Image 1 (cartoon, rainbow, N blue to C red):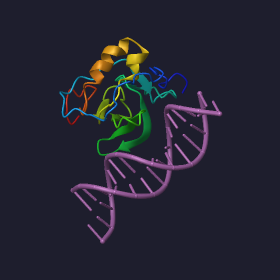
Image 2 (cartoon, helix red, strand yellow):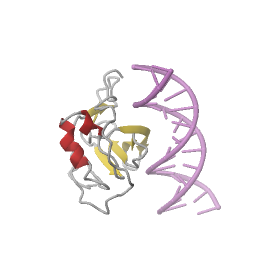
Image 3 (cartoon, rainbow, N blue to C red):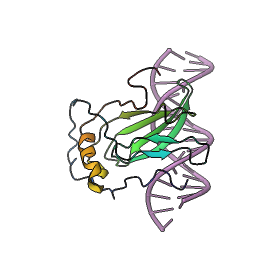
Image 4 (spheres, rainbow, N blue to C red):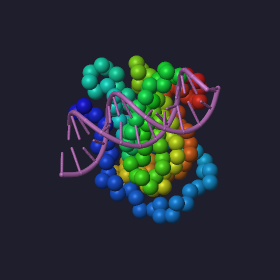
Length: 149
DNA sequence: AGCCTTTGACCAGCG
DNA sequence: TCGCTGGTCAAAGGC
């Protein structure tokens, strides 16, 4: 993997500042996930299969991957780089059509700003929006909704 | 030298 | 009570 994901919008991790108290919003309205820079991971070898996951303005660390036979899809487990943040993200995609049926499920809420906000201006707006959504389950891909495929 | 990514194994919960 | 699936943690390798 040469030119893959990693170092996507690594804004030197300066997007913090707030988030002192662990005050969390009760249940704010789910906001749309701001896409900044889509990262392509997975098919770097040359199979032709590339997973294009939309960036949300935050940095995630992959801590596991598994194939869910129940849905016949691969599922990657991401966790927020910030330990202060208990936000988690699950990305599901078809082993043959990672870019067609990509599903991103957000779990948890961010207690800090997004690194993109401090990194670039493009992510500023995204960060603001990203900071809005807390416990929202976003579904990407042609699903168009909580459809069972 | 440090950090991140990937794979495997183990544990827990539910049916 | 047993089996299966999902989820998480740990270790190793590569950049």
